[in-house]
Length: 146
Image: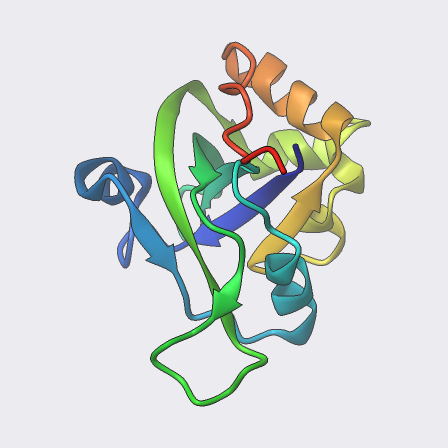
């Protein structure tokens, strides 16, 4: 099970919207490096939802209900989307300032390459986010067995 951080502007689409909708197609990623990361998302992977703008904090957990696939709204096979569903809001948001100050989290691409809207997280980084948020482990993987 891999983990990825997805950034969203809460005024455009907040974690609360995902909870209300129960599922969404994550689209609109244009940056080549972010698209590379999005292509690596597989069904069952953990998605950490980060609000940009005034919040600048991780606020919730979701999971991928599909692997990446070509965006059906575009004629560009390089542009992909992923379907995601919510798991739960974090007990306490984890702010960008915390990421920058924490020895484990400051090595994430959220801090190092801040323009990326999709960044991978290693197991240690995911565990640290959960620890700092006061949240339990993510739900078991929903990835289909081959």
